[in-house]
Length: 357
Image (cartoon, rainbow, N blue to C red; front, side):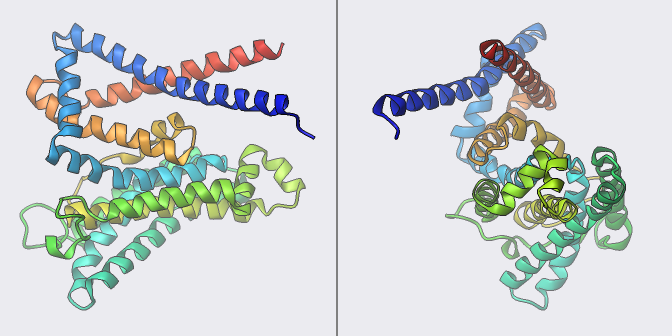
């Protein structure tokens, strides 16, 4: 029977662990911003002015806030897919190829279906087809891993390169709109895209992304299927000995992860662009990976980091134009975040080992 003293000690330990988790997240953020400020100073730029523009344009400007919230939709869906893969011990690094293939399929399919189907049914069909296309694109890496044990880092990166190249070919040849002067698909009218929320430019895909991420978090933490995936990720050999169908779970992980990346591409086309141009590649997949690690694969924390990154992206674009700072400086901040996150993680693990000794 648990005594009051034991419960108090357990509560204290839980509070301490929670505070340490917050510190492990905030310290890399502050260090990255500090070192980023030093870099700006070294180039003769005022870091306070730069960060001020980032915050004011990314959060406190009505148009900037709408753009920030809109930007998080594809990032959250990709993050949801990566959480599934990483928790299952699978490195799906081919999300950019999956994203672009789904995008071009949606961009080509939506204008055609709108002529013969209701708007809602067209959107749902595009979501389903794009998700299926992206999932199918991941089957080869899944097969090579299950059947021959080939490392998925290599195969998914190769398939991503092929997917990016194939999407460009499709835009320039198969799905090219001959009425335009640049290679792109036919443009979907604004009033036929995803519905807007509260008379703003924010589309309903943001809600879809939030729901998808929360469902993924619940699946991975509250269901038997999610527990099986985590067992496979923690120790595949032990999973085999416990009778788990590791091969089928691997296929399922690839399909879910890639499918969510495909849904992100469909949401981005139907919600923002309405068309797809040749050579368009926002490279969201590689950008989201460090955010998922910073959030430690936790759904709610991932939302916070994705929102933080979206503010950097939208506000950074405005700050770059005003101060003459290259737009890719935001990527420098993300790199610094990842470096300091790894350093803090290393020090934390070292202190834990010393404490146990």
